[in-house]
Every structure is written in structure tokens, then in C-alpha cells.
Image (cartoon, rainbow, N blue to C red; front, top):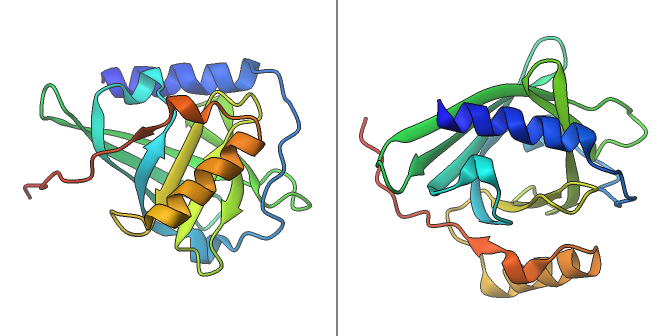
Length: 174
């Protein structure tokens, strides 16, 4: 429940954030983007406090939106937290600029700034530069690629000195 409250807060903050121009991917194929992504690193934020083993699962919906299911383990309580929402591309001229909603009617900016040629990694942020994630299809990422993405994020105005690597060593019990 705590996670859902923080997600709602995030969406509100996103909607109130001052938009600063932020370049995004020129082409995004949502079918290729669908599936499970592992959170490799992030800027600290309230709604993910203490969360490890964070994943985001995206799936296409019949109405053209994308179902979003975020999941992470609270490192203190050892309990899994989830948040479900949806995303959409509001302007097809800017396919890397999505709006995500976890608590309607509030929607936050989800900007795909960089995307691997084979959709093997993604770099996500917000125009406010307050939110930032590096995602991968694998639980680990090549250090050179990681460092390149951190450098790119720094060039785009993100405070990369605060970026934290996310522990992905949890073992999920079914």
C-alpha cells in the first residue's frame, strides 16, 4: 500500500513539474518495448524507497495503451510491492514521450531518452530531471554501456552523482 501511495505522489509531482526540453527516442515500437525490464539504476525517489529487485512489465492493451506492472521487494520488510497502471503516447510525432498513470486522473512524464537497437536497454527520465532510470532486459548490464548511459544522462542535465545501482539478486518464491 505504501508503494501505491508513493506512486500516486510521483504522478502528482510529475504533473506539476516544470517541463524543460528533453530529447527522446525518435522511434519506439511498443510491441518490441513490451515485456519485462529490470531496473539497473535510478535516481532515488520516495515511491521506490528500500525497493530492490525492481522490474517493470509492459504489455499492449486492445485500446492501444500499455499496461504497466511495476514490482519490487522492500529490503526492510522482505515483502513484494506492486503498482499497476497504464501508459500511452499522447502525440505520435513524439513516440518517446509517454504519459503514465497509476492513479487517475494524474499522469506523469515517462520519456524514453535512449533505447538499444534491439530493445536490450532503455534510459528513462522526466523533463524535470528529478526522475531517472536505466532499464535492461537482463538483470545485469555491461559496465561500459552503463558508464556510457550515465555520461549521456549527465550531458542531459541529470544529477548522476546521486544515481544508485539497484540490487537484482532477490530470489522470488512462487
